Image (cartoon, rainbow, N blue to C red; front, side, top):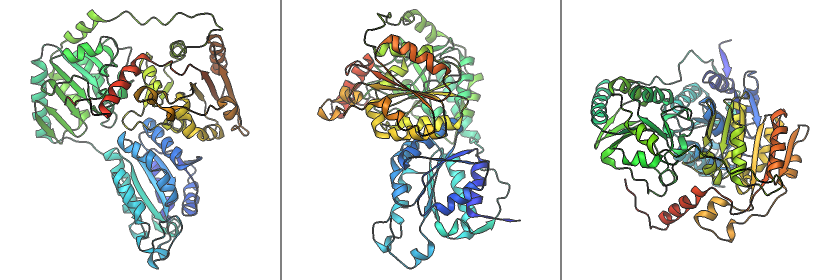
Length: 563
């Protein structure tokens, strides 16, 4: 009664921290472990087509639920998932990677094992060494006596660091008996160092209150700092104009009257860049200043005007304050700031008229990207989550005006093409009550298309818009060449062939009239709708043109970092 297996123990701990579904690929080293996990009726195993896609699915799941689990086999499975796990690390997502490992006896006897590098002395250490570089913690469990402690430690680190961790469990230990889980709080209690927090608050408040035109900008790491709500409260208290970085779209309500748009250097929303960069003080909360988010480091952000508030530090006027929790800092800063709407008023003076979509032409004319996204925008509501794939979908997605409650997910820091198909699966599994809309280019889709099979297998609903223009559009705009051309597929027919016993609404649209009819059908269809949209190869968002040039120049050494 007081003992459970190692696998049972792991299952209970995953359940305790909020995991309800885990993504898995079976292999001989993890089969016993999967058997033990399946004994927990409150956890659901989702079998994916390959480890890379399963990792992308875990990435999407963690965005919605705050934590995810990925179960793999040793060596070939773990290494196949490396790219997805590295992406989760870059995006601050706690993915618990669990791998079955070689039998302890085989390692002790120094035998050559399959799924290894055929070197007996390495004992599988090469996999752990790889994961040490892309996780916050990597542990190999080869004795039952320490299994409970090591599992607890790894999960706690994942939740505290907001990063992936790797747990490898020897295959002959999955059924070993250990003490049942004790009552333990694994979720972190985040507290600031009181003195550092007080000094940071005093310094930042004095700096912002002394500015003529201060502004707030939301960054993607607000999620890692559990500070999205605190940021919104701060904004309401200080009355500043508010912008979001592109990878933080939807972190601040776009219907809020203080919202000025997306700050993305030269690809910013009209009027937003001018106000942000002309301000004499800007608080960026949770930013990542990368070549992608700054358009090849061309954004004009001056360090002397910047307050950079991150989950692990606050920086202002060259002074760095460590040991300060972002959410607590933003919450306690709010009452210290004077109300100042100067930046918002400046934005309203130069704000362009609300975007008027390109007028609809004859319904039988070829469909344009602008008209496509106009109709997508009209279909959004508060129960929608939009997933935008790396590429032109980023830029068209930025132009969407999100209603209250609508979420937007993007993998801008890591930018792994093909991510969105798995992420769609993970988001749908994490909250089936939300309707997921995937915006995916044909080049990206070809990398991970088979995971549509898993979406259908588990009857998740939503809509995938497949942009068929025969090329890697984002690469075309950065640096074109014959390598950017694609072998065209009959995408709608292909996904139809994956349905098995499930149902799918698979359509091809070439005109606006066909799109309108497709959206009507999708609205009432209970299941996955797949819409293949035929577009011209060069029909891309205008912001991508300048962004691609700036990134290409920086890659070629022509750019100059301003920070």
